[in-house]
Amino acid sequence: MKLSGTVLITGASAGIGQACARAFAAVGARLVLTARRFERIERLATELREEHGTECHLLELDVRDRESVFGVIGGLPSEWAEIDVLVNNAGLGRGVDKLHAADPDGWDEMVDTNVKGLLYVSRAVTPGMVQRRRGHVINLGSVAGHEVYPGGAVYCATKHAVGAITKGMRMDLLGTGVRVSTVDPGMVETEFSVVRFGGDAERAANVYRGMTPLTPADIADTVVWVATRPPHVNIDEIIIKPTDQASATLVDRPGARA
Image (cartoon, rainbow, N blue to C red; front, side, top):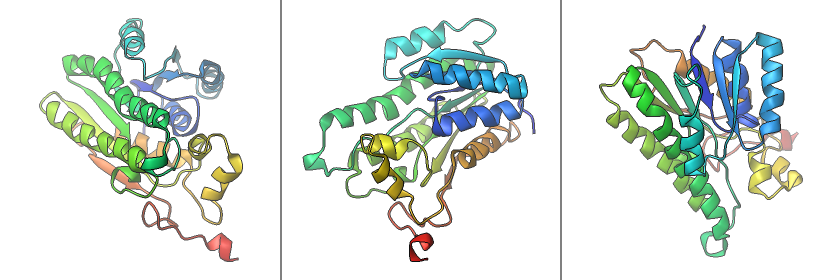
C-alpha cells in the first residue's frame, strides 16, 4: 500500500494528528504538517525524515484564524500547493459541566476549532482539488457526532456539525472527482481528556482506567486505509470504538473487576 501524493494534516503536533503523519509517512506520502505548537512538528518532521526519508513542509497555524488559514495555505510554495489528501484533525473538547453551568469561553473554543476551523481549511484546500478533479477530504469526527451525553451538549453539537458538513461537502463535490469521508472514533487515549479537564492528568487517566482504549495509531491506520481505496471507492463514514465500549457512555472495565 503506497500513497505518493501530498497530504495536509491539521493538528499534527500530538495524538491522532501526529499518528496520521507517521502512518502516511510509512506509505510514502509527502506531508504538509500544521499545528500551533510549531516546535513539536519540527521534531516530528526530523524523525520522519530520518525514519522514512519523508519530505515535510511545516506551517504554524491556528485553524480558528480565518485570515491566517487562507493566507498560509494560499501562500504554499508551488511544489507543495497541490494537496491530494486533507486530514481535518484539529479539534478539542473543553469541560464536562452541564449547559447551565458551563464556561462560554469553552464553547467558543470548541465551535471555532471543531467547526469553523474545519470549514476554513476545507475552503482553502478544496478549490484546488476541484480544479484538478481529484482529491480526498477526511474529517475526524467522533461517536459524539452520533450520540449526546450529559455535560457534552456543545462538544457533541460540534461533532454532529462535522457529520453534517461532511455529508453536505460530499453532495457539493459530487461530479468533481473529490472524495469526502469521516472517521469517527470512540475512546482514544490522547491528550484529549487532559485538555478537556483543564490539565488534570489524574482525572484524565481515570477516563481509561480498567479498559483498553484505542490508540492514535489505530485511528491513523484507519485514516490511511480510507485514503488508499481505489479512486472509484468512497468510504463515507467509519465509526470505530474499542471492544470495551458499546456507546458514548456504556463502557466495560474488566480491569477494574480484577
